[in-house]
Image 1 (tube, helix red, strand yellow):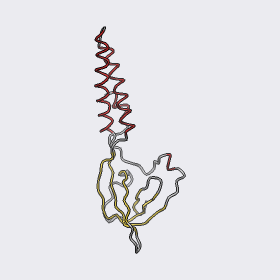
Image 2: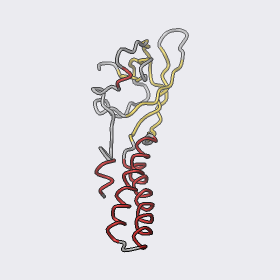
Image 3: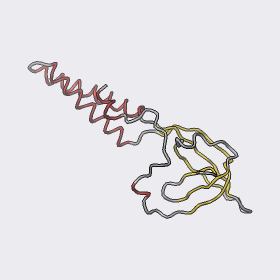
Length: 151
């Protein structure tokens, strides 16, 4: 439980158009107008650094609990045992607790050559799921994202 409070900022983490990562600042990209020709819903897994953080926090909490329970030579066994259990629990909580819903979109560019692009992006709070047939702009570079017309 204590691990979840540290590792889980949000269990249903939908992306927001109002947030960008630091590496996107100053990035220059191209914008392509097009129409979504295929949309597949996916779950975007937690990155490995979040899983590792859950493992470390879980191990620390578990080892601390083991220290409180054991006496004498049993204290070492309790510390190691509870630390291992805490590490497994922490990784499990981190792995499943911060997954993001997303979409893999295939966009056919406007124009006679009709080049096709794919982009995987979170489901943005301001947009929701994007259906096939939606027209908009694909921003290339800086992570890439498709935005329907009118945004």
